[in-house]
Length: 291
Ligand SMILES: [Mg+2]
Image (cartoon, rainbow, N blue to C red; front, side, top):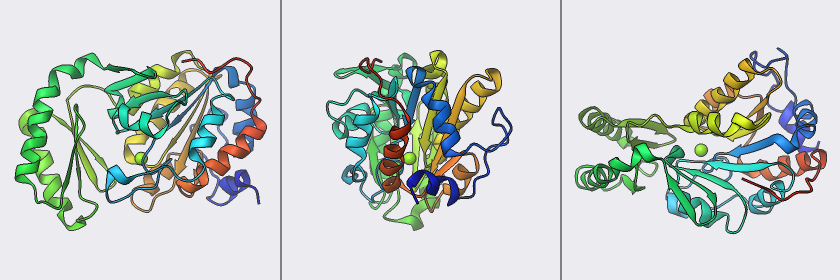
């Protein structure tokens, strides 16, 4: 069975009741609607758990086989391909060298539209000093098994290699959030402390889709739900807008993400095959990818 049918049949196809036509959205229907809109369509992807399998050490994470080539090819089929991730832009760029992607790092606190030029979301700039201090405090106060990842404008606390420390990490993070006015974002065996700036995957996606008539979002984790909601909000306001939410399965927080999605893939390894099938339906655009 080809991957599109797998995506459609394997995971129970019901779809979002909020879909504008009020009916199930199959992969085939979504693609044929997209094929009519490729000049005005953006494909968004989360990174960890969506394009790359999760690892204990976040620095060791690599793309699933075939993702790099497939994403590169996709850029000539749709107007824009964007990554929206908790990772810094520099990390995302390192995994996709030379490919014309729009990159939104740190949940949109930094963005790169053209290689080499990273823009910091201005309201986040004043927080840089406080976040560096927070990272130093985390290193001092949390058990050694907790991996503290300092990302310039946020601090991620990973406890994947020591799941029994989850409660300790959460309690510490909540205390810091309360005391210093930070936001705590939960993920898969990670909690991330961020400036209390109103910026998440939902606001990034809402901004980017303003002049598009079609958007797909591929995500695996709780932070991606805001992006799913941004597509639903736009669809509710604009019946001509096509939004497609794709859940990439994971055994931890996957059920909640799957419940909010139109289509379902089993894991990052299945993304390239799905996109290969999709590109058979989506016409190749003549003009080069623009931002
Ligand atoms: Mg993810």
